[in-house]
Length: 183
Picture 1 (cartoon, rainbow, N blue to C red):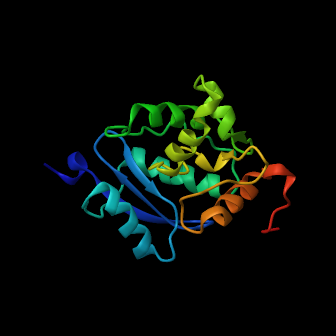
Picture 2: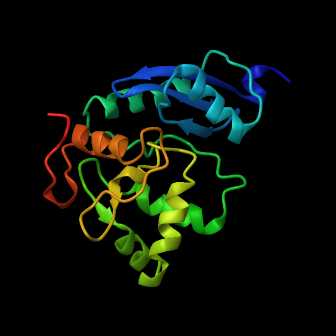
Picture 3: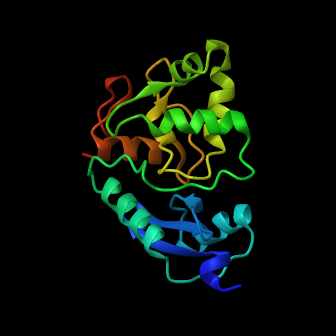
């Protein structure tokens, strides 16, 4: 089986740091937001994907990389065209991710909003847990889901809530009207 058939991985620079991406022949299997170093980004991503060769991204992955770069520079990209491999992703998480993918850049929803769309406002905590395990950020824009009190809520990407706030500031969104720390 060739690398194109079995998949691969690559790291790439964005306005917020070095991200990682992994793929198989049909779809993206993981995206990693920046860690402290490019090596740490790659390492964290490969912990979830298993060993993959670093290789030249095929066209659909290159398009995803360019989309992520554009988004991180403030372009209003929703990245819904990027194919994602949800194999092994629990069905509930897939439903949460589908809702999150419909949130437009610069817009925010609360964990409760997403839970309510799933049919039960009591699922807010489960929504937060699903988003905390999102293997596709920012293609699945979990950073656009915030706490009901206007605070950013948790964020599992490197840098935690500060990275979430930075990504939201790039998109022109401010949870709870909080001014950006990055202007």
